[in-house]
Length: 150
Image (cartoon, rainbow, N blue to C red; front, side):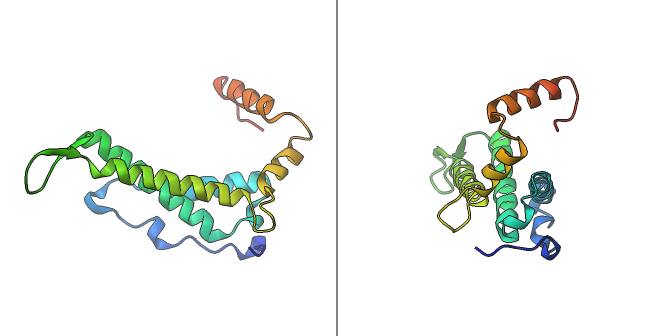
């Protein structure tokens, strides 16, 4: 994986903001922006390929859509020909998208040079040796008090 220079970050593709069937909410652009902000916060944006961030946003949004469909329609569906109850296809699709998103999240953290975890190292550097769990607990505490972490 080559290093991407900060100025070369391409604009997001239209499929991240395209209208969805039935005008359901599609969160891909929102997820994409949040991930980019998170990467910028730790000065890691240039270390992650843009297409990986886009795919992560797309799969995360599709996972959310599947979960919304499960909430709306339930876990059972009718077979189209026999009309017998079957498992909803949204459950399998949800698991698939969640698995793909998790794999992309891991890929965002590692580059191709020996699977060295670049984002974790940047986070460790950013925390100046503090324990990650202590940092996370402090963030949770401060968010409960309506303060921004960092």
